[in-house]
Image 1: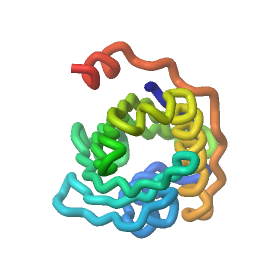
Image 2: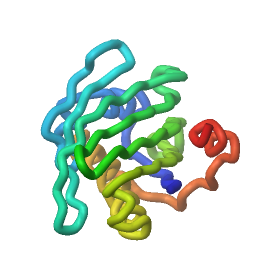
Image 3: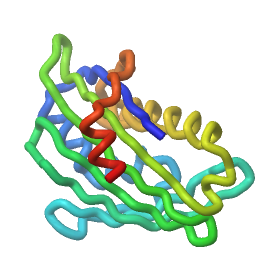
Image 4: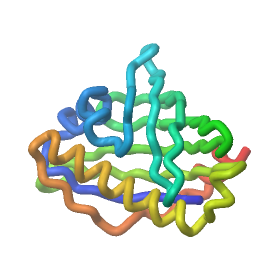
Length: 166
């Protein structure tokens, strides 16, 4: 499953970068986030209660940032364990650039799940995930006191797709 988006933040790039790395802001804007904390310079642990129709599993997971270029870009990879529902994992490239009126954030991600999560259906998960992603960035803007405008999504990168699938 591929996801992505482009978002124009009415804020400076350094401020957007700071918000993306602030665990208090992340806890407030990640739907169902029960816990998130830095465990190293580029690693976070988290616990999220996910609403998948009638099922509401808690996924415990970890996130790793790589290819970090402060206030410009990074790759975020994560894996969540949902008990009997199995595993969900994904990776995302996030880039920030100066734009007229603020900062352009481009987000391109690929994810996959196994076990019981997949039995819930790819379409349901895909629609839900894109809504969550759009809401996530809009919520970060609200927490920062900055407007966020969703723009048309980017085309998926063949290089990114191959890196994630290998």
